[in-house]
Length: 130
View 1 (tube, rainbow, N blue to C red):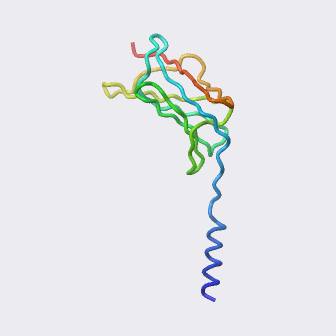
View 2: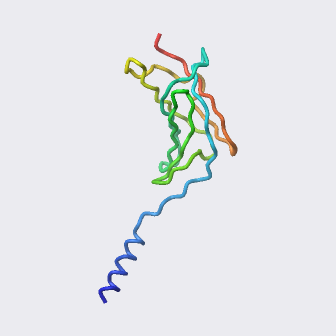
View 3: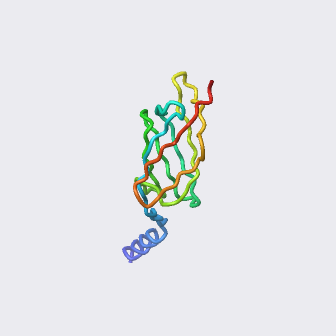
């Protein structure tokens, strides 16, 4: 009888466990962040996409060479790529050599369009510290 009770409790825990939402179909999104005037890479930073689904996040770390690759995640699932669609994005600038956040702004529209294929994106920024 104790075993039956244990099994019922175990089944109850399994039944109460949160269900993990699956990731939608993802497409590769990579690219570079460059200064508009010189074409030189922006060394570092973080790019975040705005989704209508609050459980979904898509983030890319910008390397010292200005390149990035997006990953998307839902709960504990994470994979390379982004779902098809058009997204507003936020670029958090890197820290400059003087330990201050680099002062840059995105040149043009702050939107990324992801198509059902490999997506290569260039984001141009302007240095606002003159």
